Length: 206
Length: 419
Image (cartoon, rainbow over all chains, first blue to last red; front, side):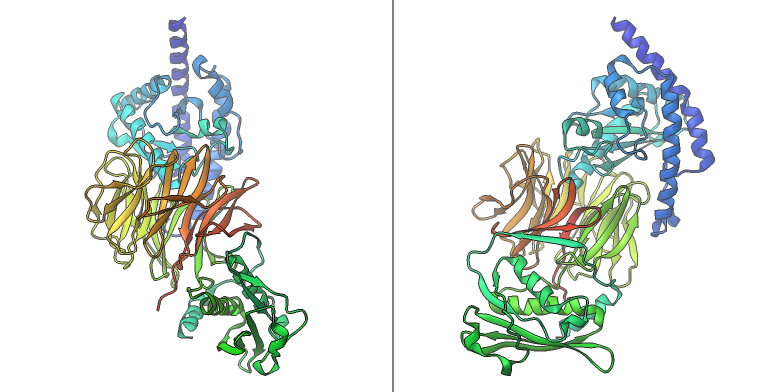
C-alpha cells in the first residue's frame, strides 16, 4: 500500500513537472516581473509602479485559469487530497495562484519542512538541478496570529528553509530567491484554523 | 502662534476634510471637567463647524463633560453673564469671520466661570480649508489650560488602508479626518514609522515584489530607498534624535536588527541570534531598544542596549507578546498581548513589572502612545473590518473610529510637530 501511494505521488510530481515548461515560456512572453524572479530595477522605485502591479495581477489571474485547467487532468496525491480540494476553492478570484504541489504547509509558529511535503520539495529541487537556467522564488506566508512584522520574519524563515531543502535536492543557491509576504497575502481570510492552515505556507513560484 | 503658522504651511497640500468617520466613545475619566462650548458666531458659513470639532476632540478624551449652552450664545467676554453658567467650570466662546484678503479669522476666548476670569484669548487667521486645524489648535489650548497636559489634537496619525489588493499609506489628523494619501499600491505596505520631527515617514513597501524600506518626506513627497538587501527589509524605527533608524534585515539569515543612518549609510548589525528578532523601538533616552524575539521559544518582548550585547526578557504573561512601544516618559510600554486565542492591548510598567490589560480583547494589534502619553492608538476589528481605536492609558475611556471604506491596519501616532 505504501509503495502504491509513493508511486502515485511520484507520478503526480512528474505530471506537475510537465507543465513547468509551458508556464515558464508564458511568463517570459508576457514579461511579468512576478512570475519570473524579479530583480529590483530603478524604474520601479517611483509610485508609478502601482500600474506595474496592476499588470502583474492580471497576468497572475490568467495564469490561474491555465494551471487550474491543467490540474483537472492530474489526479491529486492521496495524502494531499483534502488540501488540494481546499486550495482549488478560490476565496478571492484573483488571489489564488498556486498548484497544490507548488505549496508546502506548516503548523502554527513552525518553520521546518514537514515530512508530508519533503518529497514535493525534493522533486522541485531535482527539477531545478536539471534546469540550471530556471529561477524560482520561495514565498513564505504566515497566518495572522502574530504581529505583521513577526509574521514577515516567520514567513522569511519558512522560505529560507524551503530554499535550503531545494538546494540540498539539487538546486543551485543562485536559482532560488527566498522572500516573505508574512500575513499580507492570505489565501483565506477567516479567523479560523481552516483559513490559517491555508495561510501557513511557502509557495514555490516559477 | 508661531507653531500654528508653521503647521498651516506644512498642511497647504492637504485635501479638504471629508466626514468619513463614525466615532463612538465609551467610558469616562474619574474626574470630568464640566465645560460649555458655545457655537462660534459665523461658523455656520463653513462646512466644518469650529465648535463641533472642538467639542468632539474634548469628548474623546473622556476628561470633559460637555454641557449644552441651552440657547445662550455669547461671543465676546462682555456678553457673558457668569451667573447663567453655574453648571460649568469653563466656557469657550468666539467668532469666525472672513477677512478682506479672503482668509478667515477666528477669535477665541476660554473663560473660568468660577473665578469669572479669562484664561486664554487668541486670534488665529488662515486659509478657509484650515478651519479644522484651527479648531484642533483651540482644543489643544483648552486641554492644556484645564488639564495641565499637552493636547494632541493637532498631531497626526499614519496607517494603511486596505481594500482588497489595493493599499494606501495614509496620514490623517489625530481624529482620523483630513486623510492624505502618500502612496497607493496593489501590493502590501507595512509598518509606517514617524521621524521624531514629524516630517518623514519610513515604511515597508512590496512594490518591487518583496519587502523594502523607504523613507518619504511629508514636505516634498520625495523618498529614498533605505534598504533593499536580499530577503526581507522591514520594521523601521527612528532614534529619538532622528540621527539613525533601527531596521530588520534577513540577508544574513533569520530576521536580525541593524542600525543605519537616515541616508542609508553606516549599516551596522546589533543583534546576533539565530532566532527572530524584530519590531525594534527606541527608548525615549535613545539608549535601549525594545524588540520582539522568539529566542525563548515563543514571541516575547526583550530589551537590549543599542550598542548590542545581552538582551533582557521583559514579558512573561500570556502565550505571546508583540509590537512594543514606549510611553513618552519611558516608564512603561504598550504591546499586543496574545492569550486564549485573543489579542489585547496591554501596558507594562518598568518599575513594578505589572501588566494592565487596557482593552476588551479581540483582534487588537499595533498599539502606539499619543505624544502626551494619555491615549493609546491601535487597530481592531468590528464585524470583520479593520478600524482605528483609542483607549486612555488608564483603560477608562475607549473610542472606535469606523471609516466608510477599507480595512485600517498598522496605525501609528505621530509626534508633536517641532519647530
